[in-house]
Length: 184
Ligand SMILES: [Zn+2]
Image (cartoon, rainbow, N blue to C red; front, top):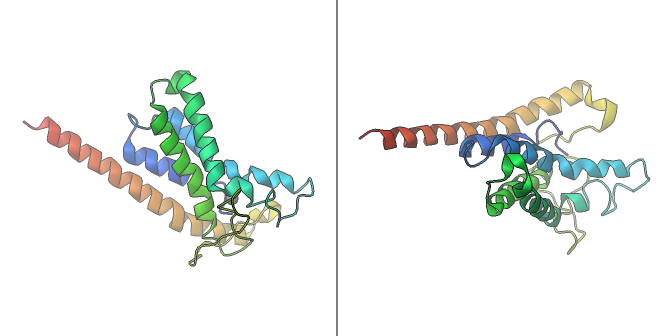
């Protein structure tokens, strides 16, 4: 996996690009949780679920199917909440689906561990991208080590920088559009 500190770069980048009117802060916060949810599967380790199992780490929680389920749940639930009640469910679904799916797609670029069960429940096959530039995240205490720092710096360059650049470009484009509308 990529680390839990880097997956939220995607929902934050998209929210910056589209702006508060389209993606209010409460939805962006939910996006940060949604994009990290797949790694809840690590709780299977103490229960003896083997790493290679489709119910273990990088198994079913990392599938397109689960990203769609999380997005459906949010699209159903969030319009009932105070801070997100005026948002169209279609927009909530599209945003949450995109950010939840970004998790396995980023994990597929890591250079270690096993592949991702992206097509579960239709196939248990595990996938990687052909190009895997991200060093795989250590799990547990070894995160606070020189290797953990190397992983974090790599993710800073290859996840945070592109996402913030995308967010910044969107923000600038929105400002330019607003300025053009204001000029008579
Ligand atoms: Zn993961």
